[in-house]
Length: 171
Image 1 (cartoon, helix red, strand yellow):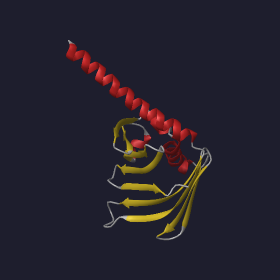
Image 2 (spheres, one colour):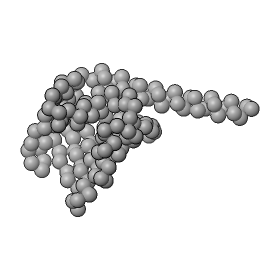
Image 3 (cartoon, rainbow, N blue to C red):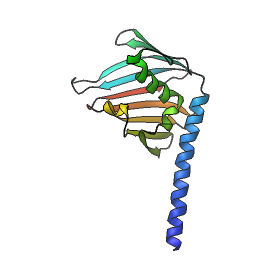
Image 4 (spheres, rainbow, N blue to C red):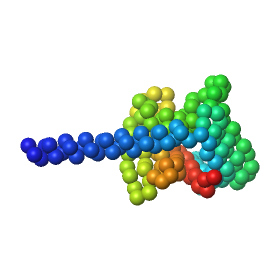
């Protein structure tokens, strides 16, 4: 009997820690009004032998826009508006903004697995149902503990492609 009580107490503490971690991350991301940093994106495509690597600068203004100024391998600008009415880009934009503002942590179509490393929280989100399941298998968020900032996003697609975006040199 004491053994069962111990297990119940242990599990309830474990779940409350995970809930707190997720809630802390979401709260911080929702309070982040502007963010600027450098990034490196690595795309591992099933049809291409070597990974495709690009670098640049990212600027994010909450509930407004995301600007990625790619510098290498060539210069290009990607600009996303949160309230984009273009139906083709609407779902992709919605996903990106939900990742950056923390709303994705409330998505009922995802199964969440949370782990904690020395300096990072890792949230694995497995797509269980919904339209996203057609394209995306899993999304992983790597969040630094202090300050609470997204350090890396990794997206695995259903066809086996992987996109990794590392964020660094925050301004």
